[in-house]
Amino acid sequence: MDLEEKWNKALAQTEIVRSKVAYLSTFETTTLPYIFLAESTINLGDTVVRQGKILVHRPAIILPEDMPQFEGFEFEEDYQINADMVRMFLLVRGVSFPSLKYEHEISKLDIYEGPIEKARAYFKQMLENAEDTQTGLIIGPEDTWQFSLLIYVGLLIGKSAPSDLRKLWEKFKDKFKED
Image (cartoon, rainbow, N blue to C red; front, side, top):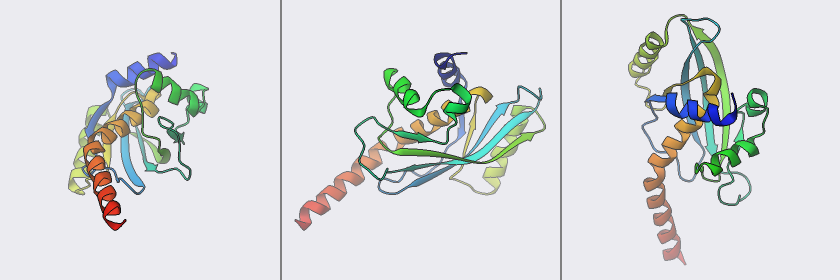
């Protein structure tokens, strides 16, 4: 399966069950913890569970527009392409991310013994019982987890954009008043 097919598969099959309630931080690093569920292709009837976080933060240097940095998404291992190629692949399709650094850290890879619907209900209830409004719950194909996570991040960026613009405008006005 080529990159285009994997991207289309992720677009068609990714489901955001629960997302982070708060907006992304405009001026600081935002941590996006997640639980990603996928039907296991090895243990049929079981569910692959990835738990981790994505850090969205400003890079140390100013990057040109549409130059996001993707780290830790294992594109090289799984697709034999580098993150720059993924960035260009997305850009050609009209998908752009702000020029920030997106760093993926996986903390746990496990198997839930049971079908994905049972795993979905279990993890959704677990997050609700813990009153966890920060952790996203995402379902998608096992072989396109990277794209499913990028879809999740893109959704949060879009949701945060109006708030970001308002905060940037307020910061600009405050700075203008000082000068």
